[in-house]
Structures are given as structure tokens and as C-alpha cells.
Amino acid sequence: MTRLALVLFVAACGGSKPVATSPLPPDKPPAVVEDKKPVVPTPPPAPVGPLEATIPATSTTVKLVSAGKGKKEALKLTAKPGTKQDVEIALDFTLKQSAGAQSAEEVVPTMVLGGSAETKTAEGGNFAHAFVVSKTDARETAGAKVPMDKFRAAVASLQGLEIAGSVGANGSTGAVTMKIEKQSEATAQAFELVRLTLPAWPAFPVEAVGAGAKWKATTTTRIANRLEVDQVTDYELVSHKNGTWTIKGKTKITGKDQEMGTGAEKAKVSKIAGAGTTEITLADGALYPSHKSSVQTTFTASDPTGAQTVDFAITVGSAITAK
Image 1 (tube, rainbow, N blue to C red):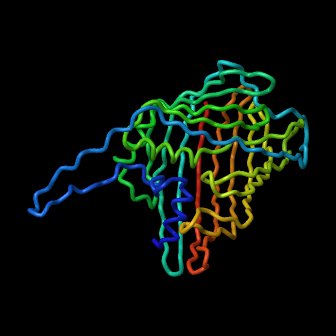
Image 2: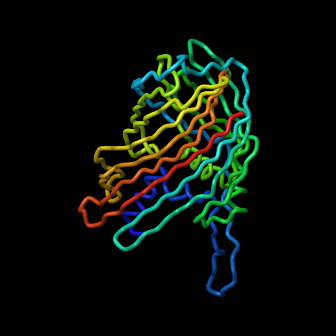
Image 3: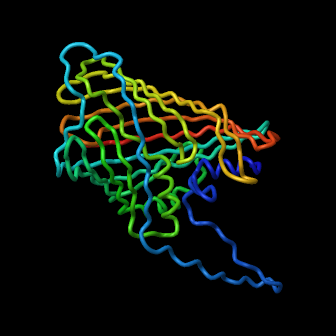
């Protein structure tokens, strides 16, 4: 990996080192003195206290393109306070990079978080909600090189994680908070991977719609809390039967040229593009929709002199199953 690739990999993952793709404890060999006798190093102090993060709110503009056919109804969240749902969230992350004839790929096994989601309050069309992780797992992913037993142990450290926030009846979201009270050595890295891959809520039009309705949702957001992009999703209401809304969407990503990092680690990012798909199933009276999505963002990065250039492709996938 070139120096530039390492810098941008760190920036893309939002941390001080590329740990997000491998939430595992570091393997450190014992120190060796001149007489070749190993010296057992003093273990670092265990992390203490809660771990918290906030995913900033984003502003989404929704424009109805076509109201569809047949009977028309408002497509909106209608959960009541105290409503609970069993929810499973599966998250995937892949990073590809290439520089000239060299290329590399980092693939993360699928992280699985299960638990209970609850609508806390419902006032003025806004819902406060929280999801608490009570069980975890991991699934093998083609190309992943992380040992599954270690990865599962790292993901298991997220039990007790609470993800909370607020959402409007039409999917407009406020800031999302993540908090876990207890940590192990790998918790921070697994926690960061969740922050990087957690999907946004789908957005709905305020107008009543029928089958075949189409609308466009436009959001300016940041990938890994750093790379600013414009995300446009074209949605279509496939059907509304027996109290269940089925929606599909296609996403396009664009972005202006920008700079990341500072000083010797400064890089120019250009050729930002991307595409993805989403499928949504929302039951009347529920807050959390079942939601499957995959989005790939590509960009080119170069150092200030233009001597080094690296092409990146970040793919984030999620599958939320809500009952």
C-alpha cells in the first residue's frame, strides 16, 4: 500500500489507523532482549467507561414526480408510543483501491446485530426511538480474511449497544446517537464499523400516493463523516396491499472536488461517483421498515503534487429485518 493509499484509507475509515475493516485486538509479539529471552510486555489498561458517538442529522428534500394510480393514501410512519419490534441489522463493508498495476481489497465479514426496537414517544409527527442490541453474530463473506472466531468475539462486545434518535412521519431524521456502557479491547473498532455502515431512514413524500407513484429524495451527506457527496434516490411505490407498502429505489452519487487531510497527509479527491439500490417494506403501525440496500462510491485521490494517484471504491451494504 502506498503512503497516499494508507492516508486515504485512514480518512475513508474515519479513524487514526485502518482498524474499521478489522475490529480485532492487535497481535503483538513479545519483546526480546539481547540474551534472546522473551520478556512478557505489560498489557495495556483495559478501556473503561461508556463509548459514545453522534451521527449528525442530514437534510433531505423530497419531490413527488408522479402520484401513481388507483386509491391514494399518505405513506407515513404511524407507530404509537410503546410499540416494540424485533429487529436484526446486517452490515457489510468493502474497500477496494488501485494505483497503477497494484490493487488491494479489504472485505469485512457481515456483522449481525439483533435486539428490540421501541418507539419511545410520538409528538407532532415526530417519533423518538431506540434499538438495543441483545444478540450478535457474524457471517462469512467472500474475500474476507479476518478470522471468523475473532471477528465474532469482537462483534459480541457490542451487546448492550443502544442506537437512538428521532424520525418524522415522512422519514426525515434528526441526529442519531450510539452508546455502549462497557468496553472490551475490540469494542471501539467494532463500534466504529457500525457508525460507518449504519443506513439512513428512507424518505417519503407528504402527498397521498397510489401504486406506481414515484418521488425523488435528495440529500447532501458525508461518507465516513468526511467525504461530502450528493445522494439522489429515485423511489417507486411498487404496491400497497393488506397494510404493507413495498418500495424500490435507485441511488446515484455525485460530489465536487475536495480536499481531505492536512499537511503531509493532504490529498485532493476528484471523480466522485456512485450508484446503489434499495428495497423497503413498511407495515402500517410499525416504525422500523425492513430495508435492504447496497451503495458503492468511487473516487480518485492524489497527493498535492499529483505524483501519486489512487482509485478507491467503497461499498456499504445493509439488510434490516423488522418484525
